[in-house]
Image 1 (tube, rainbow, N blue to C red):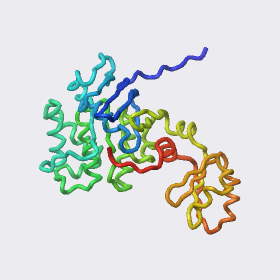
Image 2 (tube, rainbow, N blue to C red; image 1 turned 45 degrees about the vertical axis):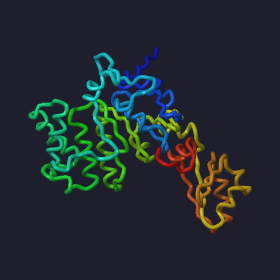
Image 3 (cartoon, rainbow, N blue to C red; image 1 turned 90 degrees about the vertical axis):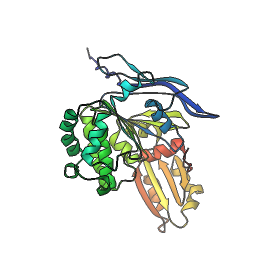
Image 4 (cartoon, helix red, strand yellow; image 1 turned 120 degrees about the vertical axis):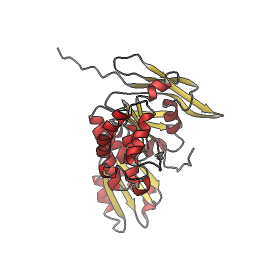
Length: 318
C-alpha cells in the first residue's frame, strides 16, 4: 500500500482578507498559505493590492474582514493585529526603500536594529560577523552608508532583517534599482535562506526573479487572486508552449493576415506582434516569405502569463 507524505503545516496563513478604501475594493477575499522553507511570490500590476496585502500582514493596515495568522511550530497560532508584537518579533522585513541609518556604520546598523527586538548586545555582536559575511560585506563593517553602492545597501537591509533570526521574511521588491550583478548576488543569498528553512513572502515586478526564486506564485489583479501555483505549472496551464515575436517594418500588418490561422492567439504590443502557438514550425516556415522582418522564437514564460492574466495596458501607481 502506497503511503503519501502529508504537506507541512503552514507557518503563515491569510484567510478571506478584504480591504476597501472609499469606493475602491483594494483586496477581495484573499487567502493563501506559506509553508516552512517556502518562497511564495506575489506578482501583479500597479494597483493590484500587493502593498495593501503586505501592510495588512504586518499589522500596518487593519483589514475590513479576514484573518492573518502566524503559526510557529509547536505553539498556538498568533493573530494579527492582536498579537502583532509577538508576530513581528519572528518576522524579517525588507521594504522597497531602504530605511538604514546613514549616521551608523554597517555593523552599527545591525547592532541598533537588534536592540529593537530586546536582544542583548552580546548576542547581536556574536551574530554580526556572520550576517556581514552572508551579505558579502565583511570588509565594510566599519563603513558608513555613503561609502556603499546600491547593491551593498540592499544586502545590508537583508542582513538587518535577519538579525532576530526570523522564521518568515517579507520582502517588498528587494532588488529594485540593482544592476544585474547585484541582483544575481541577492538571488543567491535568498535561495540560500530558503535552503536553510526560512520562509519568504516576496513581491516583485521582475518575472525572471519570480520564476527563479519562488516555489509558488500568487497572481493578483484588482485585489483578486487570479491564480496560484508553481511557476512552470501555471505557464503550462494557461499558455501555449511556443511564442514567436515578429517586429520590423510591416510587422503589424501580420496581426490581421492569414498567418493568424497558424497560431492559437495573436497579440500586438507596440511594434511587435506576438503569435502564441502549440507548434511554431508552420508559422516560422511562413515567415520566411518576409525576410525584412525580425523574428524571435522562444518558449512561453512567466511574463507571457502575467500579461495574459492582467493585460498589456500600462497602469499608474495606485
